[in-house]
Length: 395
Image (tube, rainbow, N blue to C red; front, side):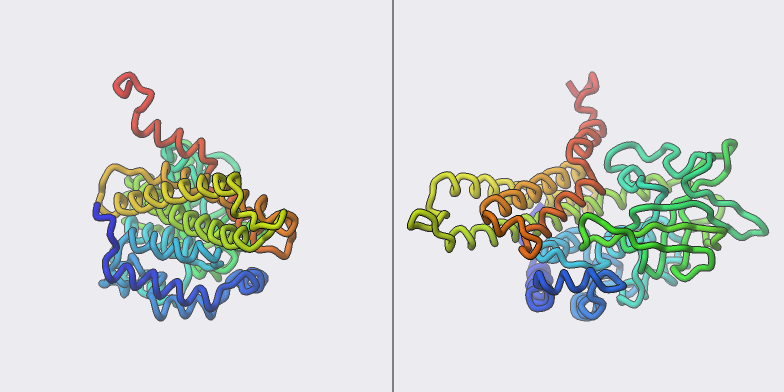
């Protein structure tokens, strides 16, 4: 792995940082999350037009930029700095890679170009709150997390060559506004139990979408109720092998992108705190001059830099087919963000705990991401299990 960024990668970072700095300050974030879409649609159009953000890792054959996971991670880091509310994670890091991995050539040709152009947004919907399980981040995804033939989950039935979906999915990222849904559902009952993926249009009859009140407003979530909803099977006919593998591969990419996003947020929280302690005076001197404060911020800095290295490696590995390490990178990044956000609140003093101060936004992002994609100890436990660290051969 070459740790130096190319000229193209530097340009992506520079352009994104410039746009985000102008259009996504703390007040802009608060205003955007309260809109019906949950994000600034004009900003999303700009990011799609100038950077090609939704199609950054989509092949040029399907109208994308043709970059890879590392470019996605670099973009996520810049968006994470400002906690930019956008469909980026759901569209570019979950739905588009899954379409590439599991869709037929005809489905990819039909669905990916409008996504890459920013004309449509997309997301992944799984039953209940099983997102991390489906993506194999905190456990094996070969089980019955999609319903297992029992009541609950999401069930798919076929009649006269058409598929219909029934069930409910919670905590669906941007599920209230996505134009396209990739839904994981259970088929076959007990006799031929298996999980398959389906394409559902956002305006399909019988689909009820409810935006949820989330701890982190910048990460919009929704509950989807599927009541006899028409769906299209993703992939080739009766061949459903590889669904779990496609989801796990998407999970590796998503974890690397999430790790980079968390690193960007942690780095910005640290930068804001350092600037504040240089100005805030106590006992006739800036509080940043006290040794104890320096030590605390130095620890945060080391944690952020270590998490950045892990996130970059995870993104490179996802593109190079190397030994995966995204789960560990995500765990490290989530811990770095949690620590940076906590220190921001502590060192800002009384103002740091107020609703008006931006520090609370970083605290909520840290807590919300760990609730949805973690916790860190489960991410590490899964990585250790995959590496057989505690098996007889790994001792």
